[in-house]
Length: 251
Image 1 (cartoon, rainbow, N blue to C red):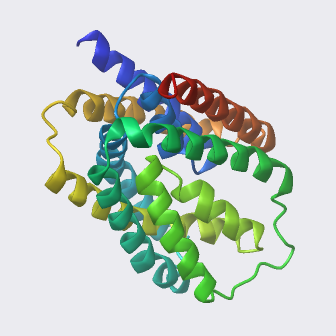
Image 2 (image 1 turned 90 degrees about the vertical axis):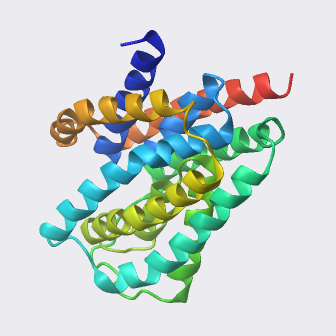
């Protein structure tokens, strides 16, 4: 196995460990690493989402079987999320990578800040809010668009916002994960139709292998690691990588 593939395996492993522990941030983490390695924004986002089709599919089915899916919440999120994701993917592939790279790095920098902020502010209510109004659909639209443009962000934007608003954490994570498969699939179809993947297969394969190795380990660590401090660590890591990418892009 070539050295470059091993590097992408490591990226996929770290990103899945983070996602398995937090229930979010696979895309944000892996895209931050890929951009810092010099991968163009469209290629990074496309590779991440192609790999995520498999992982989100498995995750969605698992949550469905465990009864963690609120179908009313899914109906509010799924279609707007797909529309936002497809639109974001098309916009990303239509813009020169060198032009948009600083903006993507800035977005990921903000996402890192949001994760740190949520570590201190997310306090689920004693009685979760079961009402899912139109604003949830707008959140799904925005989350899908940001997820495609930044190569990640569906979890940090949608899951953390809903939990912070008082939604049931277990049902929210399950419903958002179930919806994410369809959002990711829509984005990947756009990327397949607009990009050539001949040069990106190593990235996709590496992310899949690394994620597959990390998944069972991360599942066990979830029960042992303190969520608050883990979110702070991940947020700071993403901020650091994004600042590096931003500085290099603006030189």
